[in-house]
Image (cartoon, rainbow, N blue to C red; front, side, top):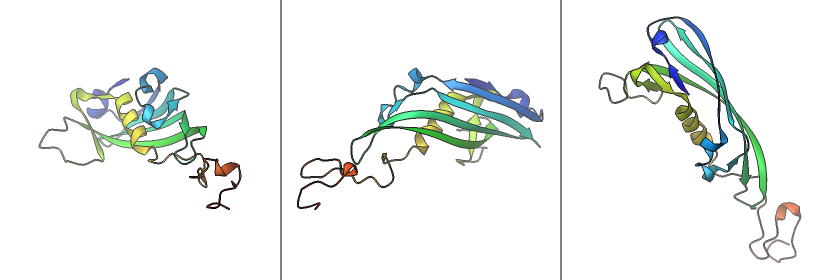
Length: 156
């Protein structure tokens, strides 16, 4: 979804709702984080106050994962909030501050899907666990220790 931001950058104060769903087919190329079970629902708004344009939005989606510790399959729903300050111009412009806080919008447009996917990927945990206290698998017999202790000497 492309957001046309010219009216906001030209100083038109107010809020505009933003609502889109990023289809599962667009998320299929990010298999490393799991299999997306639902589209990524994006709900939010753009706000211009005193010449500052802000984008606030929420992502809501469900992903099927394989636990990094015990290899069990599980599904988890994620809900995350993001806020960005939008700046007119190109990130390569030497007159603009080099700061991660700003999102630069060349041609006064923003590819919202690209930004949302970037935010989503950066916020995913590096280690995916089925639960916080996952015990993993026995290195000797391969039993999932979440289902109970095994008979191996190293775990008994």
